[in-house]
Amino acid sequence: MENYWFVLIAILVLIVLSAFFSGSETALTAVSRSRMHQLAKKGDKRASLVINLIEKRDRLIGALLIGNNLVNILASALATSFFINFYGESGVVIATVVMTVVVVVFAEVMPKSWAITNADKFATSVSPIVRIIVLVFSPLTYVMAGFVRRVLRLFGIQITEEQSLLSAHDELRGTMDILHKEGSIIKDDKDRLDAILDLHDLDVGDVMIHRTAMESINIDDASEKIVKQILASPYTRIPIWRDEVENIIGVVHAKDVLRSIASGKRTAKTLDIMKIAAKPWFVPETTSLQAQLNAFLRNKAHIALVVDEYGEVEGIVTLEDILEEIVGEIADEHDVEVAGVVPQPDGSYLIDGIVPVRDINRALDWELPEDEATTVAGLVIHEAQMIPEEKQTFTFYKKRFVVTGREKNRITQLRIRDL
Image (cartoon, rainbow, N blue to C red):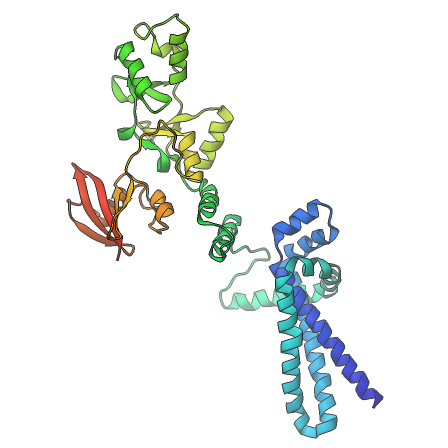
């Protein structure tokens, strides 16, 4: 009789160990790495231990799985022996049913549910014991991992020891998508965080003001006319050209013009604009927004001229243009309101051809491709492989595009609606 009690106690202990392995595996795989790093910076030794464990995730999971399977198999063997002594051959069936229920409920579901709801606390609590388990089973896990890689290699599957399926940026995007769906992050905040991650993927050519829409000054005009143009402009920094618009020779700041006139030494008629103009700064259109933002901050500049591979001026990019990619449209009392996206009563949208695809996606939560073209007009031309006529209709990306305005070879306006 005493022997039976010993077997029951052994089975109970093994179930508790199985629950420990299951809960530890769940907690250490679900733990917040950022939270652990913050705790480690504050001197939490157990948090540092958790970081060390999850950095070698294959060894960690391997050791916990080996331990869990060992105790489960041993518990099942003891239970089978126990029930056979009482019920004979039918004890095998009874042991299978009982151990299945006990293991699933008490060694899997309960500890994993507890661990997933308190992952950080659970992980820091069990980390010292898990570290010992990993050290004990490390030779076996090393051999087992090598064997698994060789077997998978036979099927053409290559696995490196430190293989990351997602980049850091992709992991952040995935986390934000999940939090947004759960309601923890509102759409505006998610868009701003996504935009920061997009800075290294976008070029200045994607956000620049094209030369056809760029306001500039002809240096050959009379000084008085130039001063009036500067004062009437909503912009504080304006490029200066000579002979042709693409020949930019300087950039003038409205504040410098006002200072020169206010000093009394010059009037609007006698002011020499080139003496107060700054040298133009030219940047390639392939420069990433991340690099250009850093360059603006480093050089304490706000405007640059964008050139193509042949050195021809394509447009201008400003610090504000890059910041607007992150925080959205920045408007002040001097900005000129331009119709861009106008919702219609029938659910469609009238959209200007020059509106960037990226801005439309952010404003309307659409998923139009941003790699094919910068503007919505460019996207339609790219997909149609032609310059459409007015009133021509196309269907792309589960949307219907109707050309409602065209000037020469430019699409000026489109009506877009869901299919």
